Amino acid sequence: MKKILLMILITVFLFSFMACKKQEEETVSQSPAQAGPLMDTPTALPGYGAPVQKSKLQVVVPPDVKEEWSQVTIIVEDKKENRKEEFTVNIGGEFKIPGSKLTVKTGPFLPDFKMSGTAITSSSNEPNNPTVGVAVFEDGKKLFPASGEWGWLYAKFPTVHSFQHERYGLILKEGIKK
Image: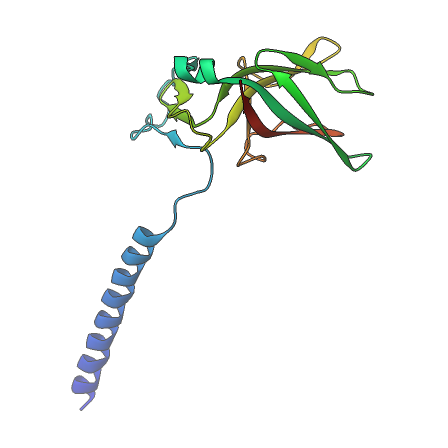
């Protein structure tokens, strides 16, 4: 009798183990994609201790994007005063944040941001994922980005890689067509 009971317990244990494993695999395959800018990442990562070659990102603005978009609206959030102010600036232009020593320079505008390998571009001319490159200076010293030519403001993902400052925040509201 003990042998039969032991066999039944082992069988139940094996079936429950197999059922849990099968459910785990299904759960992993059904998990939603992370929210954030569209970026293609390399499939193979370098091995442990392998030297990593850092390559410079190349920004490619398609000709039809250059022809259609002329300005961006950036919202400056004053955290101390708890207020927001909008600035409309030409692409490639700059503006000073009033009451501060901060200057914001705008760079490339990409209405449908896509990063693939070492290239940053726009997948289309539709504002599906509007993004603008910015550089922020205080008294002529570059604060943002820490490295590289441009930091990026994403209209749909304002907290992704955002400008970090004790008092001011920057948010891309929109791109403006010519």
